[in-house]
Amino acid sequence: MTLDPLERWRVYGEKPDYAGPLSFGSAPYTQDPAQLEHADVAIVGAPTDDLVSDRPGTRLGPRVDAFEELRIVDFGDAPVVPADAMRSHAAIEETIRAVLAADAIPLVLGGDHSITEPEVTAIAAVHGPIGLVHFDTHTDTGTHVFGVERSHGTPMYRLVEAGWIDPARYVQLGLRGYWPGESEFAWQRERGITSFFMHDVSRQGIEPLIERTLEIVGEGPVFLTVDVDVLDPAFAPGTGTPEPGGMTPLELLPSVRRIADELELVGADIVEVIPTAPGSADTTALVADRIVREILTGLALRRRRG
Image (cartoon, rainbow, N blue to C red; front, side, top):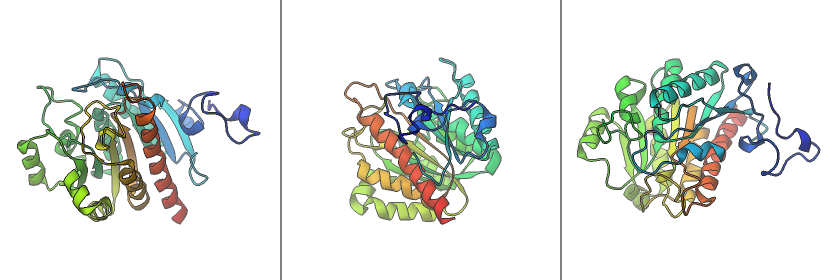
């Protein structure tokens, strides 16, 4: 069964955000994979933050029109299990597989950054090794965090080592702060991963770096992942590991739109959003919502061009 949140407001063409059933952008809502037929994009919630190393709360992120060119369906939350990361990741991977089986693009609302591992695992099982565009304060290429191998600081290392991500087509943007260290960057250099730091953004501007990103990633399937802490805490205070000196929304929003427009996007996520964090109010949730909508706009522009 598909639930249409707009049903009782159809005469008006829209409904108040605070009224009626909750879905992303008032998209039709279903948990039935059979109802994904003909969907272009499926919004999936991955409300798990069991593997964070600092502040929890991103499990609340998925509670936070698209366009005539796209049919968007809210596919609900993956059935995660609190305090059981292995079962939660398995549930996320299975949910993404259902989206892919319907030939739709999964756009996932996290959740901590560890959820990218099961998402990309499912996607690369269909498409083969894929490219990655990664906006983040941190590289998330650690071998472990506090002695734990599966963490929100290790998914990219694990995905590259598993062969699911092609490191020559992997670009990181917005890096800064105290972590990781030289060993992680040495591992990245050995594999040909491209890193752009915030000092690159401030000196060169974001547009030339996005041009280079498009050139490096090139043709072929690619995943886009956005950790909201890539933004300066002035714009996104509601995140687990905030780091001053980050991007502005004016830099990030057109960048994700262009990537979704000009690359062959086969999936995306927005992670590490804590909408209820002290000092966050609506700020972080609002910018996260806008990131999702800019990704959808890029997909729609690409569809319109044919």
